[in-house]
Amino acid sequence: MKSRGSANTARRLSKDFSNERAKSMKALPFEGPRGARADEIPALLELLNPIFRPATASMAQEHPYMYCAENSSNLRIMLDNGRPVSHFGCKFWGIRILGVPLLCCSVGGVGTHPDYRSRNLATTLIKDAEGLCAQKGADIIYVSGSRGLYVRNGYTKAGRNLVWKVDGVLTAWFKTSGFALREFQAADLPLLARCCAAEPVAYERPLEELRLLVEGRLARSNPDRFFWVERSGRKVAFLEIMMGSAGDELILWEYAGDRSAVAAGLAIFMAGQNSSAVTVPVLLDDRQMRACFEPSGFEPQVMDHIFEHTLKVPDFGGFMDKMRPALAKRFVGGRLEDFVFKSRDSGGAIQCKGAELPLKTPDAVAKLIFTGVEAEGLENCKAVGGAIGEFVRGVFPLPMVLPGMNYV
Image 1 (tube, rainbow, N blue to C red):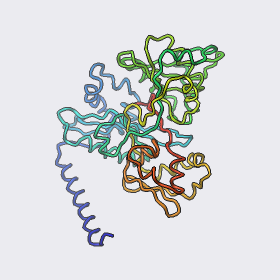
Image 2: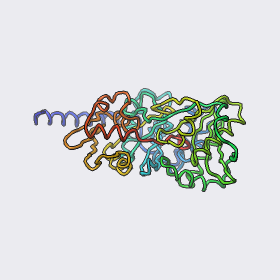
Image 3: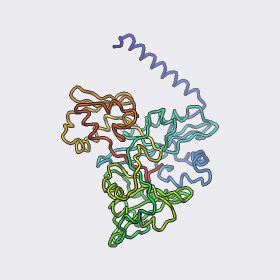
Image 4: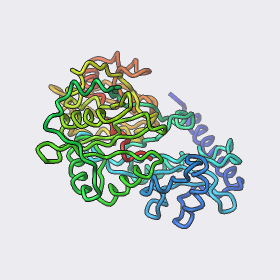
């Protein structure tokens, strides 16, 4: 146990460090970190387009819901002489996991002007953005990247999924008679909103936001393809196919509705394509979709991440308490009321009747929740026994939304 003197010393050193850091930041010739103003978005795009879209300068067109006046305060920037030189873009969405409403912060467009790199601007912005997330009560921070900046700050690849790589032979396995594939029309947006809202793991999408999401995917240099699958003249499933940069790589980017219709629609689509294969990501919890593909003879790859995304759960205790209604349904035969979930420093702990399972780092938290006890680095979770052991093996992993149209 630390003595009172050593504790006081630690507090003084921490305070001194904070003061010195504040002084050093004030000494830097930069303004920020802060949210962008609406009138600064054109200058921000002058920074981002050469980094991410040098050929098309289409960041605003592909992400109209992000680079707009309504979201400007969530675009965190550092400026030099009034010009944005580093950016950490946030967009807050409502999501549902197993019927539980949560707030997710998607992060994208993270970049620094080449002349200003290696000055810790991005690190300053990531800490600023995490403060914004805490202020807004974000349950998950979801980054469209996996570089060292994120890993060093506790973000990790997590989320156990199945990925099929299927080719034209797929058409022999699925019943397509009675199904028809129709192009998506703008007038179908209300129906699409209802179709997506019925999914157990999904983004919450107000109609106007959904319109912008579709427009953004259509603004890509190789636009996505949107389809309805009809059965007996009734729209029963939705498909979004992402076309690779060369037009020869296809991904089932998003789907919703009747799973047998999704499979039939994909088979119909492939029958008319010259592409050799389509990548099909499926949530581990999506048993109906798995049942469509597992008999086909194609072997899925089990992946702990998809699309190089990393994530963090900033408040483990708060997240787990919100998820209690869903956890109770998964913890068969157990007493969830005996469990206490704690946030602790950057990690957390699970407690039950005097026993405790510590989760000492943010990546341990995210991996346990979304990848499960078999994740690399969770040896203490694999070995834990008693009620806590039954809990972590029976409840996790939870499904996590795939980026889909909400990719930033």
